[in-house]
Structure formats: C-alpha cells, structure tokens
Amino acid sequence: MRTTGQCSRDPLFELCEHREWYGLSATTRSVAVQAPNPL
Image (cartoon, rainbow, N blue to C red; front, top):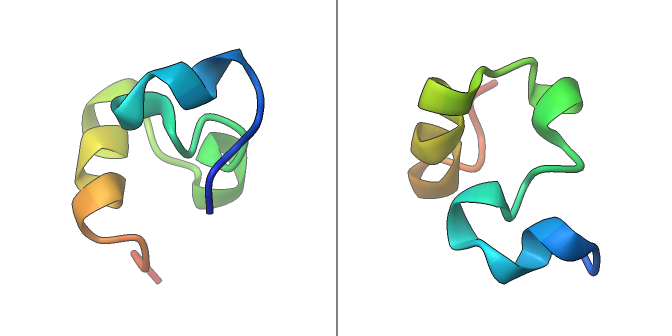
C-alpha cells in the first residue's frame, strides 16, 4: 500500500491516499502504519 504521490516521500503519510478510506486522523494515521489493518 504505497502511494506514488507527494505523500509517498513521508513514511507516516504512506497511507495519505487511504487516510479517508481508513477514516483515521493524523494522530492515528501513524498507528495505521504499524497496523495496516485497523478493521
């Protein structure tokens, strides 16, 4: 799940494109990186 956009440069924003899909905030987004399956 790696984006090829500008967010791909930041590991914390690796799921920047999927942040809306996950419905997570900037704080919980970092947790999504450790747990790519919040569901």
